[in-house]
Length: 304
Image (tube, rainbow, N blue to C red; front, top):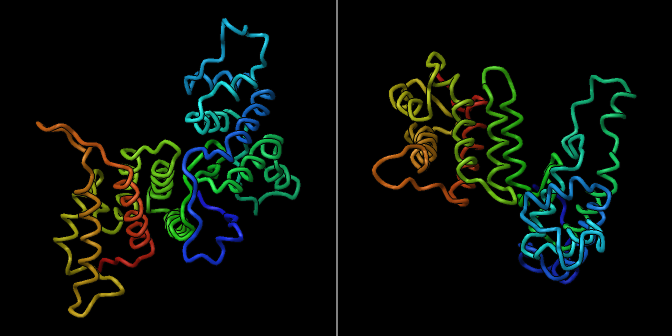
């Protein structure tokens, strides 16, 4: 997740950017609890479900259920370490039209476009204030583009490169590369990252993007089989930057594909205990995948 980040005056001339805050810093805790309270009071069923999802107990024999409102209980009985999880759960349960992922409206009438792009009550009363609150606190987290949860902020350069690759892949003949790449990015940068899913989706994105170039007639091609094909037909492949000897450019592409393929530790089981990918490995895999997807869908890797 990326967006403009406010910076303190004392930090604007510093040699490095302001460090983003992980977790819930003291300055954010009370305002975030107040956001949870207000949201829970308006959407009681969502509050109950969020509490169950995050395992926050909202009922006490000592105080009685009626003595303290539901919103107050969820806001102030939630341990500090679970506040972001509760916030994430509430966002998922609030209605949304897609938050900042607005649909394409060029083909729609003015009225239809206005309806689809109008700010919803849930956005104006809950998501927009939360977005501002997290930004002001310098939080490491922001609201996902679909409005359905929190995600780690992504650097503008990474976000731009990945989204450019995803948009370029959204064309016939490149399968579901766009969907897989976006899923990989979301899983890698989620509030609770899923590195296994992120790595798997990254590989699927490259497989979708490279299939038409390397093994179009192989219906069950994998990144591994495409690597084998790459080596067999290397003489028929070309890239814009060939290198001094004419082979370095293709060697880089091959090396990136091999690194992505062999780096997936959870793909198969064997006599040894299967090791799942780490978050750092998954993030690197997504970045590798974004570059490889761009190479193949843009025609940078061509086959004669």
